Length: 490
Image (cartoon, rainbow, N blue to C red; front, side, top):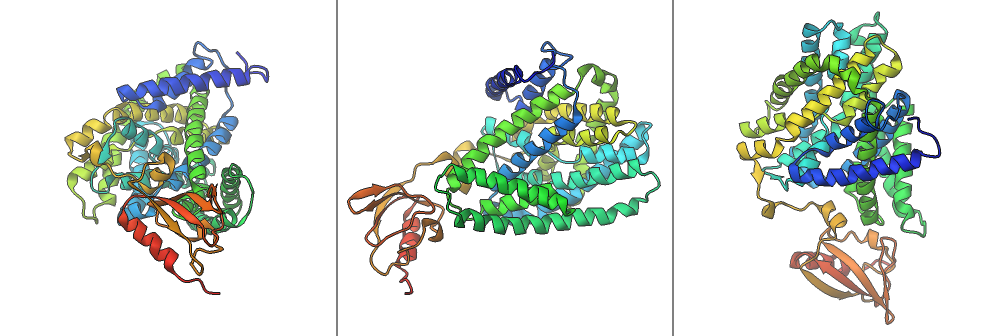
């Protein structure tokens, strides 16, 4: 079945609907939604009952890059710097040195057990060297599993920030495969250029994006998420244009924005949370359509061997070496080693050899696809079991709520207070966004001249306004009163 303009929306919407319904059902059984989305795409494909002919790696790569932009940006927005600060060094070492060690150790194994050249082996190792945050935390949420001792922020930071490193390694070794006469040392400048330029650009665009979001007056709340989408793609493409790592740039930019006071931040976070889910489904369906199950069968044996080595040898080696200089209990190191799921990102990266036209590109793609599926199937279904075995699980009733969860979930507060704004108050003629209230205090309504005004980040406070506040505790009210009691300077 060939897709046409007339039926593409119908087929796409039906696949999307089935994926959402089946994905929700899979939560009960702890089956990763990634597998369900991929399976639906494969069933709808040319080798499945749907018969949809889709063999366009270039289009799949484009869809993959766009989807990864949204997934990484949403993950960055949801990353609390306060939560990751205590484990910042561990997370960054895992996402850089850990990825490098995984690529090298797995690549060396592939070189020994296949007829791949050393560069082709390292290319395959690089493609599958990063973990999949979406798969990990969708399973943790479905099982209501919280983790002890900053373990979750460590995994969040690693999973959210290790894709850029894998991307750079993939490009570097792909260059060496194409240009056999090049020296391995020649890729080192490329590595530093990608990471340094990407890091600087990400922070610079984050600062600039905050100014644009808070200063520009759009008039409609719904336009602010659209503005952020535009800034996200500008950050990625502009960074890539100047030779930096676009994935690293958008992640750093989003982490910075997620920890700042933004106008209509709640709306922005909710929108990106929804789009990130949509992009995951679209990405997995597309990759499922792209793969031909009949072509994977010949590589199942070698794929299983490589996958097992990755799970039980390469990943643990990289984690234990990376964390050897940090104080951490052995059971936590073992759990981090086990939470090394390979998901959609390696499959997207595997399209780069296809488009480059290298000799073993098709073999690499099919092996990578098999590795991703077996990794999610083996590790993804046992995350909660291993957490309990290793005693790193936390009871749900004591699970901490992140600051951004408060925005997204609209959690009820424990107190409601009314605060009047007198003449000379610090808040007079200032926007709500500029007051920098504590995260646990929300202005839900403003009484002004006998009428109620619905507040937004750009709403300007006037003399004699009465602010209706929802608070978590008395300390929050004290912080609010301290802010409002400051006398404004004429």
